[in-house]
Length: 217
Image 1: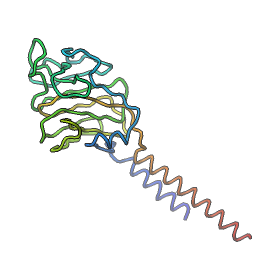
Image 2 (image 1 turned 90 degrees about the vertical axis):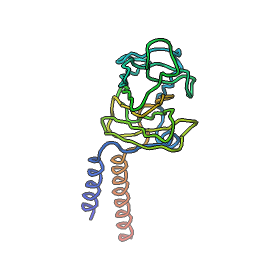
Image 3 (image 1 turned 60 degrees about the vertical axis):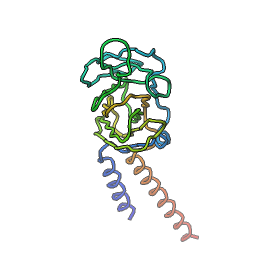
Image 4 (image 1 turned 180 degrees about the vertical axis):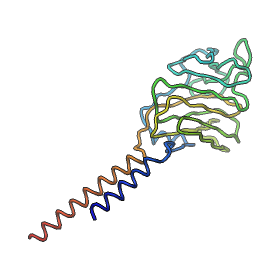
């Protein structure tokens, strides 16, 4: 019986570990915050408005590439809703910062992290209804929104058991007030499976010992 339990539990754990790594998707920043801790926050408040981010350049430890029709890279803007007063936008025309500098329809950007991460959350300032798409090495997730998460911001986050070093975000008519990234704090499914299996085996062994003592008494 003990062997049967071990085999079933091991098979369950193996099946969970074999699942795709995109373990959880969040459209609520509160739920994402509850599932993670110690994340690094980039809210662009440390840079002057109008700071240009050429394609392939690094700002604050993050390296950016942009897919826009203008091909002028990104820019830090203070012209739209944000947490810090600044946000990330796309540069759509040469010259000084203007209200026309934001990500247009189906524009995207890719951010590369200095080390591998397992948790990523992105706030976007948008006009609902809208769809947001986030792509990592674990896969692509798309969510549609009609209600804002915070102020005029939608939120899309992922936690995964497979570390990744870059992510691509796509939507329409938006700017990015904040990016949160780091390691997920909540054990993944495979970890939970192994823990449950271990607890079950320990509990059964203790019950067997108790039963032996009672018989001898």
